[in-house]
Length: 215
Image 1: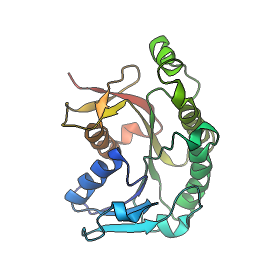
Image 2: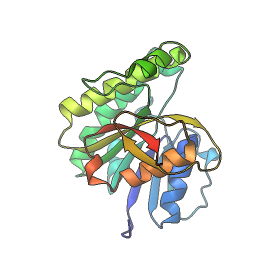
Image 3: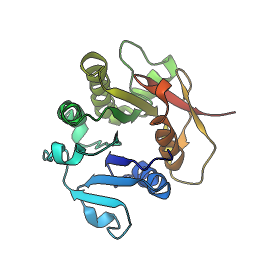
Image 4: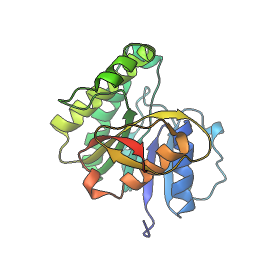
């Protein structure tokens, strides 16, 4: 990405988000974020534009989307998503705003235990989802509803979904690559780097792939 771009990032104070924002800023891009608590971000950083707000208190999406080149959603609230599909509601409002402002490229990060449209999880992933990860089923169902909406009603948008297997923070463990079957438990920084690369990959458009470390 040699040309200076504007990234609009939702979920800016999360673990993956901070690494993604750093990558974009270090490459000389402009980053616009929506943050519930702007105090968690350094407002003195050049090219970082901070807007206070939350997706559960509908923000002015036209104002946020206007002038953006890429829109990135790294959202997740396990507690709220137990009972509400907050991401689905948000994306259903976001996509029309993108259309109004001619913004096409959209990356949505879901979990590796969320099944893509019209496909089933592998038996191993299904077992994990319904046992040790059962407390996050609401998040996966919300992610699945987002993916169905994108696949059924937003094919005019250049969307891509990264079904990430996020484990913890820490140093890089390598380079993640798209995979239709294999998923690696990755660090936040490696997931962020993968997301950053995906936005420039035209072959990733309209895919809902997992990611695994390159061997």
